[in-house]
Amino acid sequence: MTTEEALALFRSTGALLEGHFVLRSGLHSRQFFQCALALQQMPLVEKFGAALAARVRNLGAVTVVAPAMGGLVIGQEVARQLGVRFIFVEKEEGKLVLRRGFVIAPGERCLVVEDVVTKGGRVLETMEIIRQHQGQIVGVAMVVDRSDGTVNLGVPTFSLIRLQVETFPADQLPPDLAQVPAIKPGSK
Image 1 (cartoon, rainbow, N blue to C red):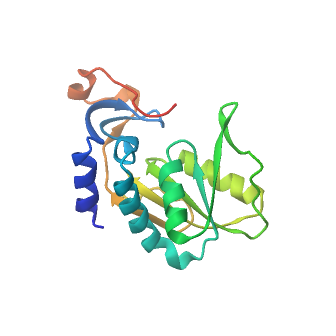
Image 2 (cartoon, rainbow, N blue to C red):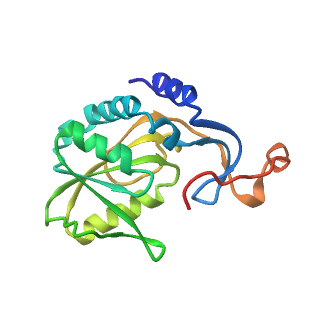
Image 3 (tube, rainbow, N blue to C red):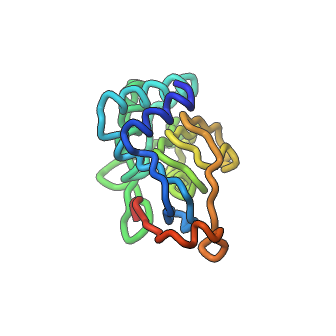
């Protein structure tokens, strides 16, 4: 799957939004990838999952770990396509934790899967949890890399859509963007 094909699927499902958005990172943007709109369609989940799985298959992951909520659907599908175990981390008292009896064995080869990455905060939190359990992180896969590959996660990274989306600190908005009311459509 090419970037253009993936973008076309986002547009056709209304999952690529235009306007003034506040991202989870606190930055502002003119575009927002609402992956949940694209990932509500199981045939698209299967296509995206297959495309990501093909890119990471040679990493030898035995477990896919995804941060909840955004990474759940695509993480599970990538794990299914790879034929490996799937677990997730979730918020507890404002930070991500491993719960529900999930265990990561020392040396276990883990792939982190997320829907959208801008600055990589949730991915880095997930990676830290894996490291705390002495797991081995073999890579990170994502549907959308909004940083155009500039986020350094310290491991091989793979994405279906990789582009530079303009982002701005709240106190440095361009005049045209400042005129549009901001909305926060993502998860908190």
